Length: 307
Image (cartoon, rainbow, N blue to C red; front, side, top):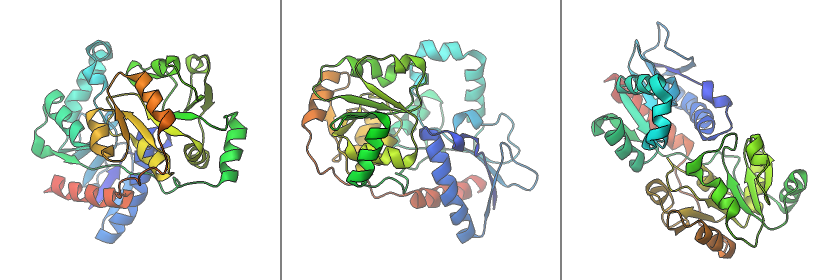
């Protein structure tokens, strides 16, 4: 089997980019074990047997071979106003997803969303979890201190990790900034001007994986104020670094983190911050699932798609 993998999102440091990079690396090894081949491209060529778009934006309207598409979440589709502004592009994306042979989603909660919102039959959906990259592990005190000094991070702090290039109401960053707290709040991620003007917080901007692992390690806790996530990859990364996680009790986060995080009611941002300030170490270990496991499960999906 020769699989064309759309690697364009791999350059992005956000969750979709992480997914594409880590999965692609493990898929190449899985293909070698199974006598197959992975090639990179935005659409299949004549010799390719199957096409995998690891993001919805890469789904093709006219795939010439069976197509697998990864749907990370459908959050925007749950917000009618934003979806309507997407106009024709949103409608065309739905049509492209309808033409996929199989969909991969990271949680059963997203699988339910795909059935209800995209009208995809359950037997065409495969749930394959994500995992922390190998670079995420507890870092030494020296590495933590160096990362803090480089970005002006205080000694004790609460951490949020994500995309800050544009305001996104469902992530509840503004509510998190406004919530009463005793510990400083540090926001990590590529940041637009609006984020850099948030009062009373430290915004690091984009950081590499080693620095992110150090910032995870040094934090009192990672905060996930959004109750509507596809998977919550920063949470398993934080756990892999030994850092406790406090999250809003949404279906995907509960599915991934049950028994590994402290949950508060969705919308109770003050309660989220209060719990984070008192949570105790050591943090539970992350789920044992790896990117190698994900690659094996993904190759099985390819075989089902061809069948």
